[in-house]
Length: 83
Ligand code: SF4
Ligand code: SF4
Image (tube, rainbow, N blue to C red; front, side):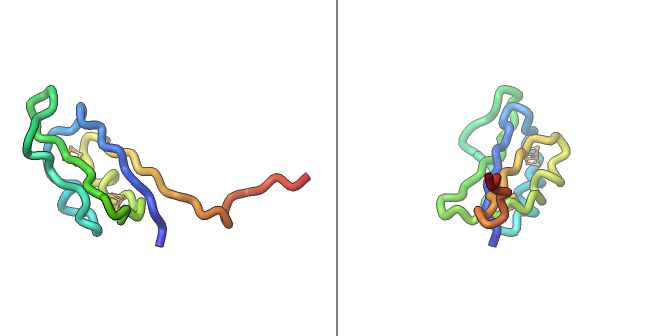
């Protein structure tokens, strides 16, 4: 299975919770112990077991374009320069 990770731009997050409802791995949560500089509770990635697949569903649904997705590319699919 593909692997990946995300970075959430907490400053832009308005705490709508949409991303938490769509992640198939259930690894995005609301960081209820604090607020960002706009006063919203930000979303946070909690993925100690590296279950993120890089599917990007969270990024697609975020209305404020807060989420950047990084997907690992298997070495076998990387182009190689052969001299
Ligand atoms: S990229 Fe997919 S698996 Fe990873 S956090 Fe977003 S919705 Fe979840
Ligand atoms: S969908 Fe976007 S704005 Fe809403 S909680 Fe998630 S990161 Fe924040």
